[in-house]
Image (cartoon, rainbow, N blue to C red):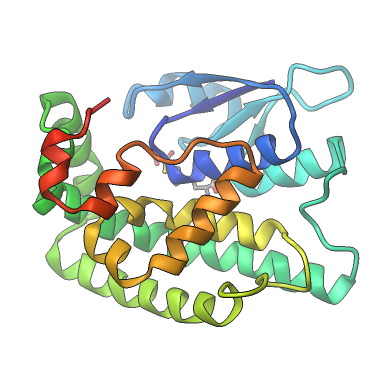
Length: 237
Ligand SMILES: N[C@@H](CCC(=O)N[C@@H](CS)C(=O)NCC(=O)O)C(=O)O
């Protein structure tokens, strides 16, 4: 299988967590933001990544969108499952997947790119990185005000997770697509020292889920915990 992705995208991380959880071998093709459209649009008709090319007999040629990728992987290799057997619980898991996709992943993008353009500039001050940050901020209209509204949505999601994640799962009594999606889409906040300091349990859980899914943590994860000064010392990749 081949995953077309941006290496830093949290929606692509969601797809990688699912592939890793199921231990499905895959390769990645890293695309450059903006130029990616030339590769992706003819395949899926859309402009977003992740896009999975299963490259297997009796499988679709192209599966676009992280939710569809997980739906496909679940049918392709049901074990270990990310979906729940109980219908009501499965419905709730899909509702939460959608909530995190539509509201929280987008809000995390706002908060993260606002941070990267300001206090977090030193994470990678190369012109390439700064250009990507500028493109993303302009594409999604990210500024101090919109990032503030996004931070409120994130606070709601963290309050909900604090009820379920301190000693359990979002739905039922086992790991599901809901937990995976929350971990992937909140992971960019791990690079922001204030979040790391205020919600240690959240990032411990995100770390555990990465281990469970055989996926490395985002780069500079440790520097996020140590504070802003350590970014300039951290090896920037
Ligand atoms: N609902 C989509 C969202 C994916 C998404 O927003 N991807 C972003 C990267 S994080 C993207 O491809 N942006 C480029 C663009 O919109 O042109 C999914 O779950 O796959």
